[in-house]
Amino acid sequence: MPGLFTLVLHTHLPWLAHHGRWPVGEEWLYQSWAAAYLPVLRVLRALAEEDRHRLVTLGMTPVVAAQLDDPYCLDGMHYWLANWRLRAAEAASLRPGAQSEPVTACSPNALRVFGIRDCAEADRALDDFATLWRHGASPLLRALIDAGVVELLGGPLAHPFQPLLHPRLREFALREGLADAQQRLAHTPAGIWAPECAYAPGMEHDYAAAGVSHFIVDGPSLHGDTALGRPVGDTDVVAFGRDLQVSYRVWSPKSGYPGHAAYRDFHTYDHLTGLKPAG
Image (cartoon, rainbow, N blue to C red; front, side, top):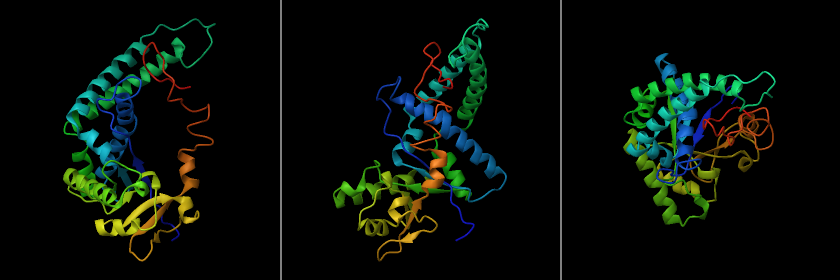
């Protein structure tokens, strides 16, 4: 229908706790936490205080939710944020380089500016985390769901590629994934983000049996017609297609963000400070 738009934010990470730290493993979790989960929850809480409702549909897989509540990960995140603050302070204290030095993202002048900015960001993140995240993400998410600020999308327990699973294992994964959300948030999601947006004929009956009323697929699955949801088979379960034209304006595999050189390269580190300056 004209004028209807749903903003769906989805996140998934594999289980990273105790699977190495630097430069991959837990580092990936803590970077995502600092750069995405903390700021998104901060904005949503601010909008909730303005009595805003039905702002966004938030998809969070059970694997991510478990890590954001896990005591080991919470301790690790607090340590990571403090270390980020120290690294940023080190960069901010670098002496300016000579005027004749080439200007690069890792030059002393650029790193000093970057460090000053990151000091402020790290301070804010540490304050948020110490004040609000002591018991993990679930209390924060539950408050937003209770207030009608966000709709939650759940998913199968370990985020498996469902079409290749044995039907009994598929049913188990979905049932336990929804139960995990109920246990953490006191809400059972009515919708899910299907892992990899995958679908195979007959899965709608699994969804209906589990109480799932809607799920997300990729746009081409609906022949690119993503204006409305579509009932699947002879069930009341509705499939919504991801709008690729909109999605690629946010994250494109072919052009623009994040591949273009004008944007930040998340795989480049300054080895002196461990920070990721703009590329």
